[in-house]
Length: 368
Image (cartoon, rainbow, N blue to C red):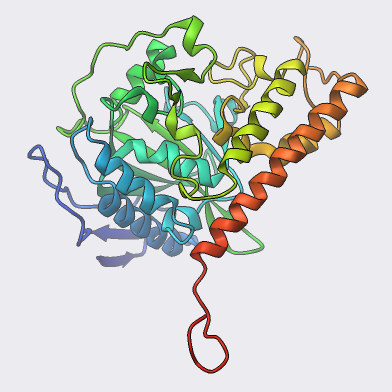
């Protein structure tokens, strides 16, 4: 990569080492003009390097491919989910995610869904493909940097490979299918001096390119089956498979069975406590910051915040958006099941961490 510093800002030209796009799409120069970044911003160079690092990783790990091929999806997932991936290092404790329907709409007025970095990097972002090209700008109105990546969506995967049926809403599925740009909104922590991706959005507002797959008809959404968000396929398997910790934990993790049982017990209490009427993908209450709890993986991403909110009587809320405390017995039972789920989850994560930790030399110089 070649950098040219100018008085008005910064220009970046070229992104080497990224796999060329198929479908006859040449990798255009990764570039932003000298007048895009505001002059004198001390952190613009760091954001430019961050953008380059992310673009390289996305282009190498998740290149344009046939939209029905699950093998590139799995390879992409494995790279992005790794704790040391560039993506994970630049995500905060939770990231906000959603579609960009109107480029002029402020983020504060946009409906977004909150995810932990593990679930987001393993089940959402790998659904997109990249060629490594990007632009960077500073948005004065949002008071954030934005990185726009050239992207496309895998719209022909098996239904169980999506975290939930995106086609439950025609407009949402249409924007997913037409995605040609992924936008990362980056903020700077003034005290720590580090840059983090605060919000990510997908849209069809970027430049058209040939790697965007042809749209397919909206798949059938059966309210009786899919409104439960978890369903059983013809082979008797629970779907979507990606939300059953697929990819998040190893198949040999000894805690998986207990984790599934703990989630199911907790989900019953969520239902009794009226949690599942709000924290589901169709967002019936139109919350601007939606938290999903309808699958094990989604709940795992948010369980600590859920426990805190229930304990402090901040959820559930009534039809007017006002907090309504649960009856004491129901609240205690829900907290007991939520804490049991959190405990098994912690054990499963600890097992994974011990399994992947580098082996240290044992006394005498041999490896332990």
